[in-house]
Amino acid sequence: MARYGFLGLGIMGKAMAVNLVQAGHSVTVWNRNREKCALLLELGAEAAATPADVATRSDITFAMVSDPAASEALCFASDGVLEGLAPGRGYVDMSTIDEDTSRNIATAVTDMGARYLEAPVSGTKKPAEDGTLIFLTAGDRTLYDDAAPALDIMGKKRLFLGEVGAGARIKLTVNMIMGGMMAVFAEGLGLARNARLDPTELLDVLAAGAVANPMFAGKGPLMLEGRFDPAFPLKHLQKDLRLAKDLAGDYEQSFNSGQAALDLYSEALEKGLGDLDMCALFKALTD
Image (cartoon, rainbow, N blue to C red; front, side, top):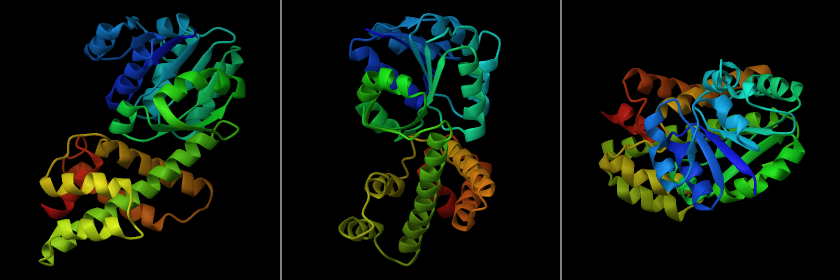
């Protein structure tokens, strides 16, 4: 049975690593804040002192961190992943990052004879806990095949999209769409309330029609109740919209609606709502 490593035990990573451990796999974990390792250690995971140590002890090392800078630090810093990899071993970065960062990491990993797979996920806290994430992978096909048993524990669907960069591009596109949907949804709920309508009736209408979707059904009641516990922190979606804007620029694609959503999320971030859930945009627009 393969030995797995897991780096980054935040909202998403902790739930994903728990699923691997509970499925009976050998998992070595590391997190910058060591306290976040406690639950995994109770469940039977082993702790490592550094990312390099994790990579040394693992056949395949998974990473799930917040942004491109964190991914680069995890890989290139002293005692980083590169110092622990060996020829044939695998490194799977599941973070949402830009394609240039992913390619830089891929080059460094493959130059030393190891294998690299980018595998950003579609899904937030509940799908991570339930093992129903969607993996958008690209890179080394042999690593994709070898990592498949672990990916199938953590997710319900996986796609192999070809060369490194394709996974990053599609994930940023997905999150651009999600950010735009949430923005107009938040404004719509606010409009319903200010127009002397019952917003819960609006939710019923939406759920019965062509625009029905799980995000509106799940987030709508929470927004109306003022419950913004972070499943996907607002600051991370704002980051993804910024990266999507850069991606659009690279390919000379318009970003008009994306820019409108980015502006709204940036304003919410300035109001100090970054650590709340992405649906706290409703709070920023209506308070």
